[in-house]
Length: 115
Length: 377
Image 1: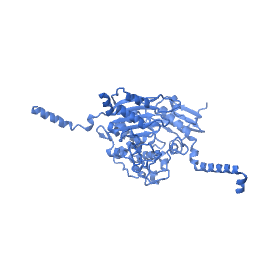
Image 2: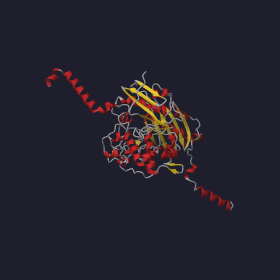
Image 3: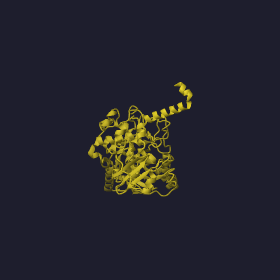
């Protein structure tokens, strides 16, 4: 073991860093697994509420939900008040439920229309 | 003066004593009475601060969407910016927590719960935390190991997970699933989870059927609030932490209710004792370096009081100022001695905005003393 460290000091440090990162990732696995869903969910939900609860213009709501990480797909189904957004590979849909209930994220996302 | 006239006068004066307390006050009916204050340098100074040129591309600096000032039950100032109008039910973010507390206050007045009732009595998943009482949750002192941090640590943020990912279908259950990190009632830890456990407990207090409409029947309708939207999670629990929407004028009605100690005209909507609880600092609050300049937690409302180890957070506002505060600059301020209620809606994406600076300028422009002084000149 110690001879390995002496022979390959840089590889040893690198190995240690990789192991530490792996441990950190394992500790945070629940959070990390959920992370990709954030961008699509936040964009879909807050756009839906901005547009259909607060009744703001579509253009404004798009800017309002803009994050550091961009969305890679977006569809506002105005007729049904359903908003679908895709970010970090995860697609999420929020739908307007009624005049008192506003918008809610759905368990299952709509598929984005082919563009 | 002839005797009969004197008698009539004393009779009339005697009758005046029987007129209910609310008679001489102004209350909003379908809409607010408007007596706009005349333009003044102090109002100009307020507007310079609250409404600088708005940059929707960079989203930097102070970005007020609505500023509404009520004095003694009448609108004296109102201005909107960006896409927001008088008719916009604006997202209240965490101001929702204080609205939820006010809704709970009605249930409290009906004797549906006590502050030292265990939360588990009304919300069974809290059986995992049998020591947590409703009063602890209202003080943000459940002791649950919550991580509020928003945008800067999104991976571990409990709020982000609750609103958008694995907590979203049942936010109260998600909050209740956290470990007990401290003895309930011993430490303040700002938590949106605590608020949603309260929102779920309300269902247990009023029953499934009444719950769906409870904020409306208990609070909004008696106050004449017509614009309210309150989103729920998939389990039907109100997102008490974050997702109430009201017009500025409707939110101000809740402010006026609080300014007048829970009374709306001749109806005591909230027990005075409930408002007193909202306005009492959490007994075990320990100010720290991190909380420097932050308002002091009361019962799901924020207070401008000095506590051991910290001066009052807003030095230029009166000591009795209290507020409902939310993400991105949402605020409902109540200044009872000045009879002022201030609603500020905003889309502040950075930390430029200061409660103290706004309140200082509002007071200079609209506090009764400032106004009479200006008129005397």
